[in-house]
Length: 197
Image 1: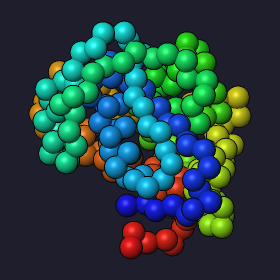
Image 2: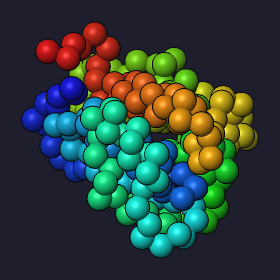
Image 3: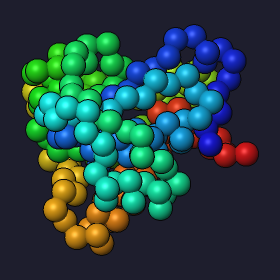
Image 4: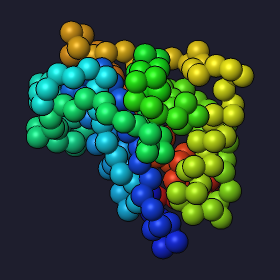
């Protein structure tokens, strides 16, 4: 688990995960990320690009989440509203990011697919002496700067919609989300070389 220093307790960092229906990928990723950033002042939310009403998470999502120690039984889908205040917007497919920017007003400099963002964050190590929130904001700026010029999204892979896929494919997607959200949490909030202890 990531830990923070007292000077990191200034203002919360808002991250919003965006998928299509807010019934599998984004709620699971949000809860996994929340768990990985325990103790850091982070507000985590999830939304969908479609307005489906307050539907529960897909049964398959609840099943895969439980396997990973996450409870999605009380989750209800939420549609995307204004994302202007978000420090970071994370989608799973390029269309999620484009919709977040065009329709949600997210800053294009702070909107990425999950795989793209983790890829770019692996290239940089922001200063260890910065507090956790300052470090995260710097890391996002560095990731944005690494994108090809005049291009919102790079050609880094997407995480496909698990709806209608086999149980094995859904399990693989859930495990991929766990791996990538853990890597994202560490890249944003934990200085290089800091241990979990």
